[in-house]
Length: 94
Image (cartoon, rainbow, N blue to C red; front, side, top):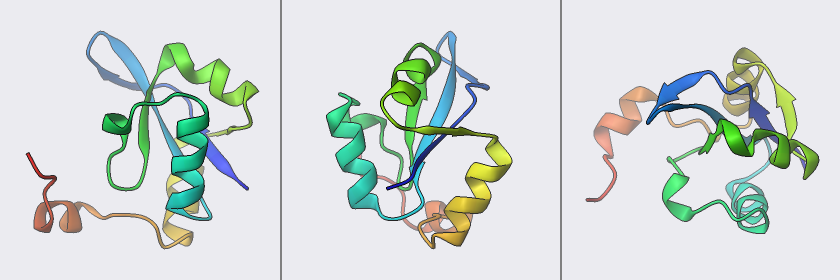
Protein backbone atom coordinates (compact mmCIF):
# COMPACT_ATOMS: atom_id res chain seq x y z
CA UNK A 1 0.00 0.00 0.00
CA UNK A 2 1.39 3.37 -1.00
CA UNK A 3 -0.63 6.47 -0.28
CA UNK A 4 1.23 9.67 -1.08
CA UNK A 5 0.67 13.26 0.01
CA UNK A 6 2.31 16.39 -1.33
CA UNK A 7 3.39 19.40 0.71
CA UNK A 8 0.55 21.84 1.49
CA UNK A 9 1.09 24.60 -1.06
CA UNK A 10 -2.19 25.07 -2.91
CA UNK A 11 -4.05 28.13 -1.53
CA UNK A 12 -7.85 28.17 -1.17
CA UNK A 13 -10.40 28.98 1.51
CA UNK A 14 -7.89 30.70 3.82
CA UNK A 15 -5.54 27.73 4.08
CA UNK A 16 -3.05 25.71 2.06
CA UNK A 17 -3.99 22.31 0.65
CA UNK A 18 -2.27 19.02 -0.15
CA UNK A 19 -3.26 16.26 -2.52
CA UNK A 20 -3.59 12.68 -1.30
CA UNK A 21 -3.28 9.88 -3.87
CA UNK A 22 -2.70 6.16 -4.18
CA UNK A 23 -0.29 4.79 -6.74
CA UNK A 24 -2.10 1.42 -6.58
CA UNK A 25 -5.89 1.88 -6.75
CA UNK A 26 -8.79 4.16 -5.96
CA UNK A 27 -10.08 1.50 -3.56
CA UNK A 28 -6.86 1.81 -1.56
CA UNK A 29 -7.18 5.60 -1.59
CA UNK A 30 -10.81 5.57 -0.46
CA UNK A 31 -10.05 3.06 2.30
CA UNK A 32 -7.19 5.18 3.64
CA UNK A 33 -9.32 8.34 3.45
CA UNK A 34 -12.22 6.69 5.29
CA UNK A 35 -9.90 5.32 7.99
CA UNK A 36 -8.67 8.86 8.60
CA UNK A 37 -12.04 10.59 8.48
CA UNK A 38 -11.65 12.50 5.23
CA UNK A 39 -15.08 13.52 3.94
CA UNK A 40 -16.16 12.01 0.60
CA UNK A 41 -16.73 15.52 -0.74
CA UNK A 42 -12.96 16.13 -0.61
CA UNK A 43 -12.41 13.50 -3.35
CA UNK A 44 -11.73 15.03 -6.78
CA UNK A 45 -11.69 12.24 -9.40
CA UNK A 46 -8.15 10.96 -8.69
CA UNK A 47 -7.14 12.55 -5.39
CA UNK A 48 -8.38 13.93 -2.09
CA UNK A 49 -7.87 17.60 -1.25
CA UNK A 50 -6.47 17.82 2.28
CA UNK A 51 -6.14 21.00 4.38
CA UNK A 52 -2.70 21.77 5.81
CA UNK A 53 -4.00 21.18 9.34
CA UNK A 54 -4.42 17.46 8.51
CA UNK A 55 -1.01 16.92 6.85
CA UNK A 56 0.97 15.74 9.91
CA UNK A 57 -1.86 13.47 11.05
CA UNK A 58 -2.04 11.73 7.66
CA UNK A 59 1.73 11.31 7.48
CA UNK A 60 1.68 9.80 10.99
CA UNK A 61 -1.10 7.52 9.74
CA UNK A 62 1.02 6.17 6.89
CA UNK A 63 0.84 8.63 3.98
CA UNK A 64 4.26 9.15 2.43
CA UNK A 65 5.18 12.83 1.95
CA UNK A 66 6.54 13.64 -1.51
CA UNK A 67 6.98 16.71 -3.69
CA UNK A 68 4.15 17.74 -6.00
CA UNK A 69 6.27 16.67 -9.00
CA UNK A 70 6.80 13.17 -7.62
CA UNK A 71 3.12 12.88 -6.72
CA UNK A 72 2.00 13.74 -10.25
CA UNK A 73 4.55 11.40 -11.85
CA UNK A 74 3.44 8.51 -9.62
CA UNK A 75 -0.23 9.23 -10.34
CA UNK A 76 0.41 9.24 -14.09
CA UNK A 77 2.45 6.01 -13.87
CA UNK A 78 -0.39 4.36 -11.93
CA UNK A 79 -2.81 5.08 -14.82
CA UNK A 80 -5.22 6.64 -12.29
CA UNK A 81 -4.58 10.24 -13.38
CA UNK A 82 -7.59 12.15 -14.70
CA UNK A 83 -6.30 14.73 -17.20
CA UNK A 84 -7.57 18.29 -17.58
CA UNK A 85 -9.14 17.27 -20.90
CA UNK A 86 -10.98 14.38 -19.24
CA UNK A 87 -12.17 16.71 -16.47
CA UNK A 88 -13.75 19.01 -19.07
CA UNK A 89 -15.39 16.08 -20.86
CA UNK A 90 -16.76 14.57 -17.63
CA UNK A 91 -17.68 17.36 -15.21
CA UNK A 92 -18.69 16.41 -11.70
CA UNK A 93 -22.43 16.09 -11.12
CA UNK A 94 -24.00 19.09 -9.41
